[in-house]
Image (tube, rainbow, N blue to C red; front, top):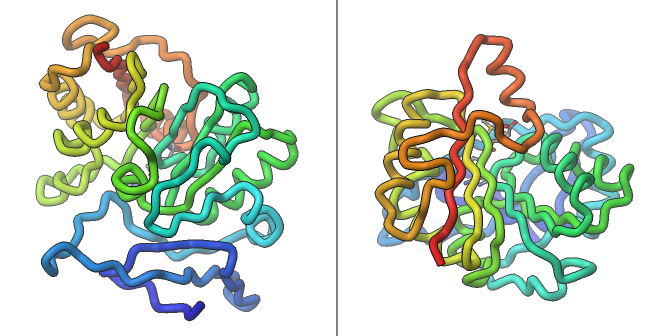
Length: 261
Ligand SMILES: C[S@@+](CC[C@H](N)C(=O)[O-])C[C@H]1O[C@@H](n2cnc3c(N)ncnc32)[C@H](O)[C@@H]1O
């Protein structure tokens, strides 16, 4: 497979055929050229940062990618064969360095976990955690979550959807890059099982209010804490990004909604 430069039109499509130049320790990503809808530039909720990998992350990617990272070829994934056992499925979008996802997968061996993240160092770090803890209930995808939802995941397959500290895109002109938008929630709803849970968290008050407005406006969702209420003591591990926010004195807002039956 040829290695194309990652440009603003390309969608990272990472598979086992990556290469790791030894000098700058970047992993070059083989990309499939995407065909943007009617030549419109797709709005992305992320920026691919220059992928500096530590030696440990690079080794993990070389050794364990094939076993734990699901290859996505713009086709529907077969969830029945993905995990060792059929169990309730939690999906985390944007797991960052993966600390909290690892913790949850360790704590709940009776559930399956699928983590979606575009940032390769985070994938490398989490791969090491998965192997060290011999986990069999977790798989990762290194790709744009929106496309995974649109094409990769079948309808009615998710029992819990986690979105912890998504990029707030706080400048007004960037707000459109936020993941949480009415259309995105509609897409999510198609993928949720009956009575599935949505758990979102942010440390950006304006984004929290935006999330609340978008979720409350959807008639297929119910705020489990009561209308307009946030979740004061959420049952999730502290995330790496949250710790950074705590050091800066940021507040935290958690939202917990349920798909109506
Ligand atoms: C601010 S970080 C938070 C990471 C982590 N949840 C935490 O709390 O430490 C947001 C993460 O979401 C990822 N992300 C943003 N949009 C994404 C998308 N469409 N698909 C997959 N990952 C995405 C980014 O790469 C980034 O790692």
